[in-house]
Image 1 (spheres, rainbow, N blue to C red):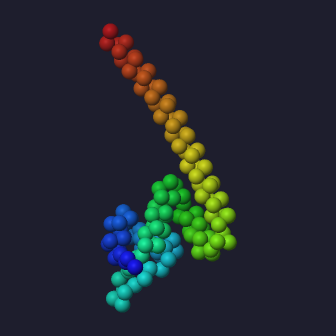
Image 2 (cartoon, rainbow, N blue to C red):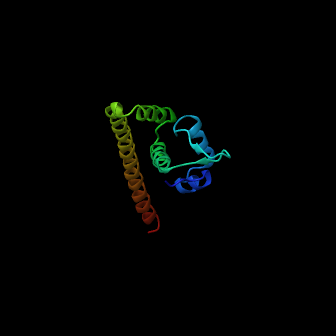
Image 3 (cartoon, one colour):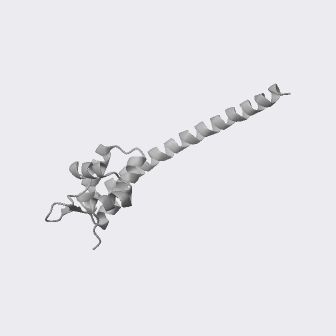
Length: 124
């Protein structure tokens, strides 16, 4: 079984050490195994969880929503439907945001094209 130190897991997941500790403190991560000297040792399951948490956090899921999702996960397969629904709802939120951003990019492109045209007219 591969084990990682706090520094190694931080580098591997690109998550700052204080964030790792915070996620553990608020229950997003399971209690991390510790050596006799108290040093944390993370495993592959922790890597998977951290990468999942990073992705949903980067897409705007709140800490409270993440905590709720993780609490459902810990309850096992009986919560599969609810977890899927949470992810589907979150996916739709992201898709709506992408559509809004695409509309904004289209608007900006139109303005840039107009300004480019107007600039050329000024230099004639």
